[in-house]
Length: 257
Image 1 (cartoon, rainbow, N blue to C red):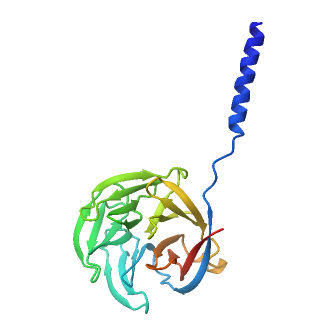
Image 2: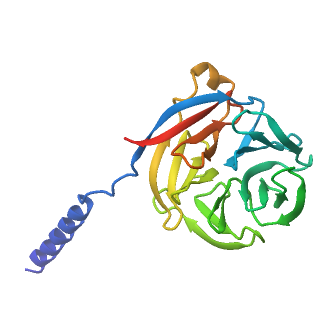
């Protein structure tokens, strides 16, 4: 009798586990198709680390120690408006315009440069802990990545940390360049893959995934590095996409599949 009770208990337990295991899995993040609207040339010597459009100006920050710079170009004409080299000991990273400041990160140097958006002159330097990868401005706070699956929120004036958010369903992602879109979403390159993740920074949910793998031809990919560079075009539903050493910048829409 005791054996029968134990057998029945085991059967019930196994049945419960099987039922739980057979439950419907969580729906994956929706797929986003990249629709190319237009293309423009991109400096294929640029190790792109940050991209942003603000007030008709395209800002681009590049990396590599001793070769990093930031530049501003007229979005309509492509004419260079300003350029500044990063001091040789630093490896430049993500950029964003917040009010009257253009912030630029460094990779492992723990220094953020606050620049004049018009001249790109350094106004001040701020120290921070950890690595700097991507940066964008969302309302009254900065959103920063450090190559992990966590976003860090910072004060746009002091650069002090005000909070963090870890991705809820993409643990292990390596968030790189960021763009804060008008709808509140954060778009992020997932290094070193071809994926772009659309993230709700309030919840950490990944609400869409796009694949940039088809943008370059096989010949172009031979001399290019990873995709890195997302910039929303204000007042439109379009974005600029590029990458490190890419010969082309793509104007695209993200379309639900």
